[in-house]
Image 1 (cartoon, helix red, strand yellow):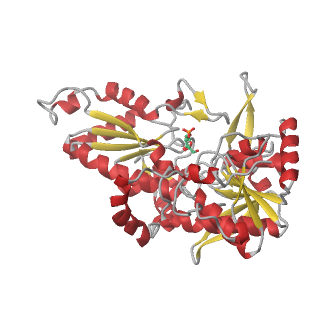
Image 2: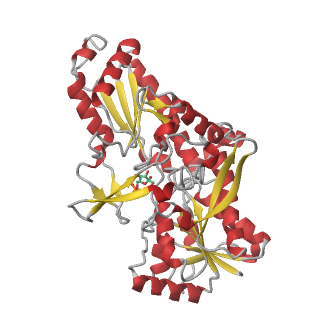
Image 3: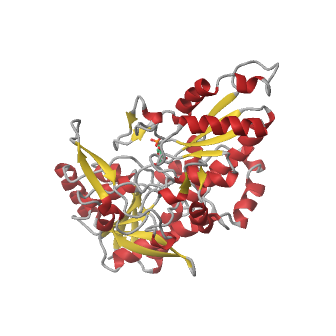
Length: 458
Ligand code: F6P
């Protein structure tokens, strides 16, 4: 294998450049050329196939900075599936013209589904990324536990996970954590710490929405900032219980901080943030406001009287405030945990291709005795019996639905990731770069401007 392509697809994460960097460094050592394809699968479909040689003379180009968030290759939510015959043929033509011997796709569940038809054309491997931490399995058989129940509505069935295990062993998790997750949780924890003191001062109820689609991992990780209540999509909202807990906490501490995963559902399974759903190009629901919906419910269920004593003589407006942490979770410098394992997984992806693997996924495994190690698994093991790869959900044993908090097993799960997740250089970087004199004098220099000068076309 002499020439490998690499692309980043789906929503970006802070650790993408670190993964690309790991792949390029490994390729340099093995004297393999790496070609970066622009804008994920969309770039492979573009008739001119914009691409960048990432390691001329087997040295990484200087624009590739593993400490910088985003991706110097750009990304898109354009995917392929096996019904797109003409698109697959186009990809085959482009791959041949580029003389690629293999392809590394950096992405999550959408990217791996999109990689399946391409794996029939040339060897492909996936290096994982997603802030949602939903790529993988809670245990090896989980993908086989999906069933399809017939319904009258389109597409004629609904999917359901019939779990065989109520309890789980951390060492059984397939792909324990995904690069991007730790930095997203760090951003959330920092924001919560700031929101806490202002809610505390003004006797308010803060409802803070975090990302994660149908998976509540980011909301769970927020536990490090000690929110009073955590609501995750995997556990249906119980409004009565939530209201009672808020009243209790408000009486005790005169403010409450609630973290809401954006995909939170009511008892009937309806996604509260998607009452008027819009979809991204990959067909994923764009959540418009689970926190808003919960805020409206609480305005009714709490009534005004609980605020009247603590907030006497203040205007009646906004004893509650609702904030979305939003895309700050996806951006910025990756913290040490993400940088380190992202680059290892990027390197592993190169090794997998060179050892003749295809349709494999580089993964991060955990062992109590020795910590983390990179490994791999066939993408087929992640597929259900109909071939679909589902986002991993938070296992019920990680969440205490009665307390609306992380369970003891959930605490055990988070510790290996977050203990020492921040490096001394991450802290030093804030000290030296945040208020650097050069920043106020000079314009922002975008990597897009620099990379454009290196882009070649077919
Ligand atoms: O999948 C990553 C993610 O950040 C989700 O957590 C979120 O729902 C979605 O992407 C947001 O996507 P967009 O960039 O289209 O707003």
